[in-house]
Length: 178
Image (cartoon, rainbow, N blue to C red; front, side):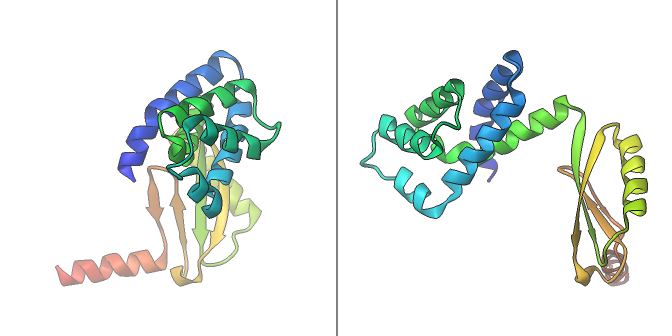
């Protein structure tokens, strides 16, 4: 996956810089999500990978599936990707575009995984603490994983805080075995 990420980065950066310069960041983000959903479909992906399609046909098929949802600038971006045989990078481009967007907005998506449902008051306290610590606006989504036994795991793109009972037991077992 690192290779896809490396190949996608210049496209994502160029798209983001264009979107910022034209005050279209949210529009581009939504349209890239749509394109990602379309190319992630197995049948569409297989059709777009056909060696019999020219780059113009590949771009035409992809933009045709989007209907009138894409702006002219995003259509042009799809054409560039197709010309360079990089349409398969769209999910990675979209992911990196969203990272650039979050960094610009000083926000971070946090996943809170717990053994049981977390009440909204505790979630708000955690959001405040993380906002202060990370110096960014925190958007929390929650998941329930009964295998944690108790406690929580907090995940962002580059940070994992494991406060679960399962995690603590694993650390204890590792300490005892070394």
